[in-house]
Image 1 (cartoon, rainbow over the protein chains, first blue to last red):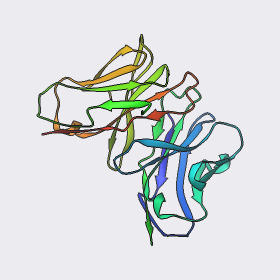
Image 2: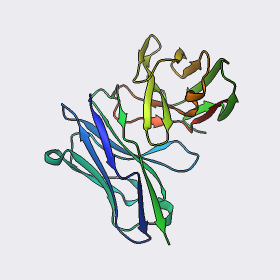
Image 3: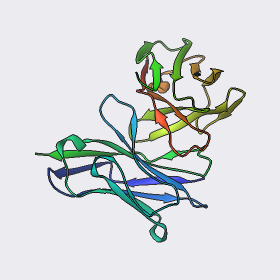
Image 4: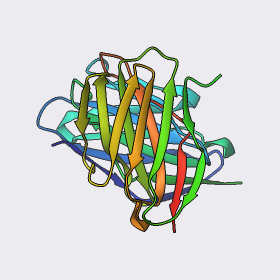
Length: 113
Length: 112
């Protein structure tokens, strides 16, 4: 079964600094990959997804992620952090039919003024 | 109005009580899911349903049951609640292609 590992349960950056949230997956077949964001007291919102098209995926709020098959990675980046980016971020992997989406443990992003 | 709604949003119950969490969606999706979220563990799939007559166990179904009353409604039941079922519960939906899931706002359940 596929699985996801998010490196770092907490990441802290200064406002304006680069955001890098790491995600590695294991899957025996080409997966679908997702990043979701969860703001306090809210559900999960899709940031971006990779579904076997372009390897560099652009999402909402200036985030992007690159699918690297050789590294089995799907790291999330944003060039310049904003205070409003403070939230918890989840990487997820699923098979083609998406009947079994597996989530990482989450990374809480703190943005310092 | 929200596409995926969950009721109640918060619930405190006692050990041994039966409790039902409800989910409704207006997206017209066939697929619906129930997850629980625990700190440090991410989200784990409890049950999923591809249509009204198709219900499947997920990663952690023990102690839970579900009912798909209609395409738009999917309920999660705890027959006899226990304290380690204290968690945040999310309902989600996806279309037949299943390329993206849409989440409800969550239900915070506390079992004392």
